[in-house]
Length: 391
Figure: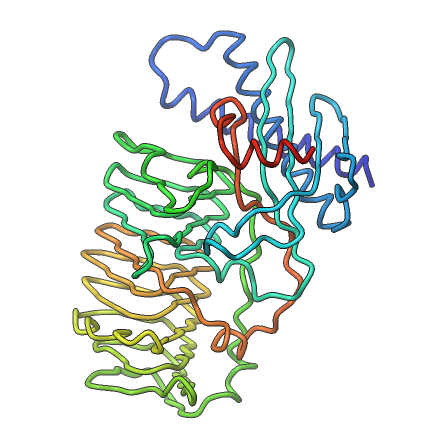
């Protein structure tokens, strides 16, 4: 098993080194990269891959690294150290991370060395899919070349995090008040900056970093049809003042086809759309005005939004395409890509478990990073100081 892990780490490291060097070459000045600069980049990416390795180890053995004495692993070019620690969750201050580990990974290439550190949560109790925690989540590429705003709807102490399992493209007019993570290549367009990722609660961690791919929750509309309290037999348009249900008695509406949603839907409930969802108009401004109102929209196909406001958590099996000025009060998850050709403003309202658990059964989630540090840059972090004292 150790040989398998080592092989996986080398594959991941090779891919990330190529990506990092390519990104450096695209964004650097015309001056050629020195041999030492190249070695530093490779050492850093080896160190990052060591964190990936630790996640694999914890997935196999949740007790790994839980001894009083730090657990150490040395593999070609990488040294890893793991120890127990404590930390708050990244999205809800005051909520503690369960079964946390403090991981230190150092990479060495020739005479260059680099170290990174991470706090990792290894859940031990069943939970809803991790992807549902994010304000913005793409199973494919996340491409926002123009204006992007992601923030919590009301509580400025909470983070509104985003993630993509592939390429992240961010333009200069972007602000994410949460962590940004990506599993593929990072493309920062001219004028864009890592400072665009400014978590309200970071505790010393970087706002933007690479994270291994996160599983996308399954959409099983055929199995969920039996839950419907109202059924539309074909594609339809929903307009006018509509009330789907209450906090204590949420409705579940099934649309067998495409849906054009042109007005707000009040109350709490779930829309199941087997086809595509089209969002138009600006009449959703009064939606979700009450903290007890929550709408979950499940879409089997794609979502097309044009100059629209919508209140609700959207989960789609295809991709999301936005144009004009799109405002979402809730969250957005696409199994495919998320692409915006205009302005995308997302005011995060987390999806209530009471609605999501009607569709997804809580299960044991894989280990994931809740805080990431570049050791040199963040050595003064109070979290680093506290965790280091526990090693």
